[in-house]
Every structure is written in C-alpha cells, then in structure tokens.
Length: 500
Ligand code: BES
Ligand code: MN
Ligand code: ZN
Image (cartoon, rainbow, N blue to C red; front, side):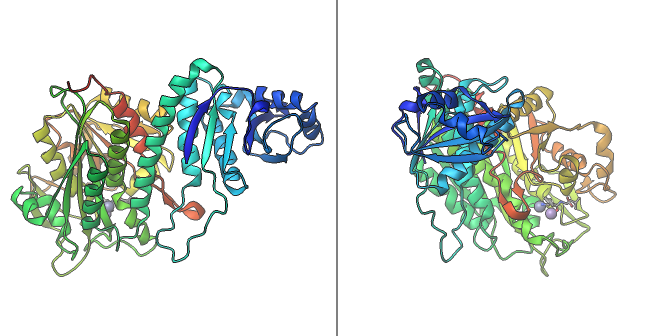
C-alpha cells in the first residue's frame, strides 16, 4: 500500500472515499461536521435516525453524499471523545482500513489522523495509522494452493493532517511507519512459515536476500564447521538431535560514525522446539514453529533501519537450529562447555533457548557493544506473568531497561521490566557443572534471565522475553511481528551523526 500526506477540507477531496470520525454519543468530529455542512445536514440526519452512534470501530458507508467531491463517505466510530487514546485511535483506523479493503475503493483519504490523541503529536498519529493500516491488510497465504484474492484491495491511503506545517513531519512519520510495517511483515511471514520450510538454512538464505536488497546491510552466514571452530558447545548441543544443520547469522549495518560503538541485537532462532529428549506434550506443539520469532524480529528490525537509512551502527546475531529428539540428541544430565568456557549441566533439554543464546551473547563481546539486547520466546512462564499484552524486560542496566520500556510505549508494543536480583541466581546451582540450565518452577522467566546474565557480564544488556506477544492464538492465530516496532523505535533514538 502507498501512503501520502495531505492537508485540506474533507468535502473538497476528489477521492473514492473520505473517512471521517463520529464520537460516541453521536457527536461529529470536526471533519464530519464539515461534510455535514457541505451536504446540508445529511450526516446529522443519518445520525439522528440512529444508524451511527459513534461506538468505537463501528462503520457506516455512504454513497454520493451531496456537496462533496468523493464517491463515498465512510463514517467510523471513535468511541467516547474523552477516552480517545492510543488504543482507540489504532482501533478506529483498523476498522476503517479493514472496511475500505473490502469495498470498491482502491484509494481513500482518512481524517482520523486529525483527531487529538492525548500525549501524542501529529507525527505519532501518522506513523501509527500507517503501521495499523498495513497490519490490517496483512495476509499469509504463501502456503495455500489457491490464494483468496481481495477483489479491489485498498492501494493508496492519504492521511490528512490539520495544518500545512504538519506536512513535513507527517511525511517523515509515514516513512517511519512504513519501514516498521515492512519489518513486521517480514517477521510475521518468517514466523508463520511452517518448520519444514523455515529451517535454519532457509533463514540464512533469507538473510542474504536482505543484504542483496539493502546494500547497507552486510550478512555473513556461518555453518556447522565454523560454529564448531568458535567453540559454541552450548549452541551445538541443541542441534545434536536434528537432521537440519544449524546456522549462525550475522547482520552488520554501519551508518553512524566509526567511533560509535554498535548496538547488538541477538535473536533466538529455534525453527522448531519439540523439547528434545525432554519432549513437550503434544497439545499445541505446532506453536513451537514460532520459536524463531525472536530471530524474525531481528530480521524485521534490520530491514526497517536499512529502509530508513537510520544513522546507527547495529549488529544482528541469530543462532538458528531445531530442537529435536533422536538417538544422537543431548540427554538430561549431559554437561557441555559454552564458548565462554563455563560448563553447563543440561537438566532439561527443553530449556534450549538459553543454551543457544549463551554462545551468541559471548560472540557479541567482540563488537565492544554500546548495548546488547536479546529477543527470545524463552519461557512459558512469561505468558503466565504478563499474558499477551507486554513482553518482559530484564536488564543489568536500569537506564537501558527504561529506554526499552519507553520505546515500547511510544510504539504501542509494550514491555514491562521484571527484576533480575541476585537472590534469583541460587536455583541454577549444579553439583556437576558450573551451573545448570534450569532452576525450579518458581519465577521461571526470571531464572532463565539469570542464566543469560552469566554470559553478559562485559556489557550493558537487556533481555526481552517475547513468549506471550510473538504470536496470537485462536481465530487470529499467527505471528504478530512484535517487537519490531519497539526495537526500531528504540534504535531510532540512538541515531547520531552519519559517517563522513
Ligand atoms: N520455547 C519455549 C518457551 C515457550 C513455551 C514459549 C510456550 C511460548 C509458549 C522454551 O524453549 C521452553 O520450552 N521453555 C521451558 C523452560 C523450562 C523447561 C525451564 C518452559 O517454559 O516450559
Ligand atoms: Mn524449549
Ligand atoms: Zn524454545
């Protein structure tokens, strides 16, 4: 979809459709008011008849409204005016775009972006309208033999801003929204692909394709032999049971000054997590194809910053493999040596994410990073703690954690900090190795983060446990593309002067 920014009166738009808001209860927004005046009170007449109360997300499509130059006028409910905040704004835009995509309009002008949202500027509204619109029309039908064609899809959306002076910032915001949306689409596609297609090898190939499309991104894909040479014994122990060979994928993007130390993103890329010898129960095991969504968010974020030519130095590391049982698989009780030299007693082969991340986090040291952020569908306990709303943030630096939480707030991709106090470390104690890969059931997400913290002593680090937010279940089952919005927004706050 294409987006443009415009400032002007709704009744004067020559368009297939003009979208204006109505507040609950039957209160016209300013743009709806302008249409109403131009049409001699047609809108208020309809509203008086009770066809549009202004309930959040309600829609009413009108044709040939007198006094306007558009073919259609779409009324969209905004809910109560005093409750019109981030969530409501996004939900109104989503309803409008979903409907537009199903009507005959190839193109439309939307005025919801003119409505005030508490604490948010015009640029925020534009950026989010773009992200939400793209999310609303996203489809995953790569694996269907017959694609369900949308007859006349929405191709172009014009976002209206209140003043001509908003045009420049609006255009930059739309570009930001579009890059984030493209990153999310990539992350969603990778997440939704089945485990027999989206293998570690496939991820390596897709990374190389990104480097081809965006010359500012350099990609290196390491295979088993090189991974062995690096001494990544912890990572490799997870791949033992699998026929699919592992990959270690490195993205490098340098658009800031040489002096600027890079930010490193590390993604968990388990393309299928059966649990290994500590086999998972069968129920919903297919969800474990999503166990590479942390990796997918690294792909998506690099795509986004490359599209924006963001002035940052960034490195992306993805450890990709399957976790499978077999006669060669790692067994509970096995002891392995990580790249850091620390030994690990693997008491549960289903706690594999932390094993692959451990070595990737050690590898990150070579970049002398400004900060390292890992992203992982790490623990089922995270879903219990924060549900499907926020991901968990754990960090050895509170300022870093705060910056990530704040980026998540701005991006409507929320994160919430949990503690990483030393008191939680004790459970990892082992009689046979330096430490074990699991502690008791209590505080499972925190003890997983404690495990990772043993490999991140040399830099500022944060861990995002995205187990609850990376995909949805039920009718809307599928990958969400989170936390690409959070990560991209955060990286954009790190922009500095370009390399000269
Ligand atoms: N990939 C899972 C975590 C997960 C489970 C994410 C369910 C989303 C939904 C991870 O590898 C895992 O299996 N974790 C175990 C750890 C346990 C063995 C200490 C868990 O959470 O049960
Ligand atoms: Mn597991
Ligand atoms: Zn896993």
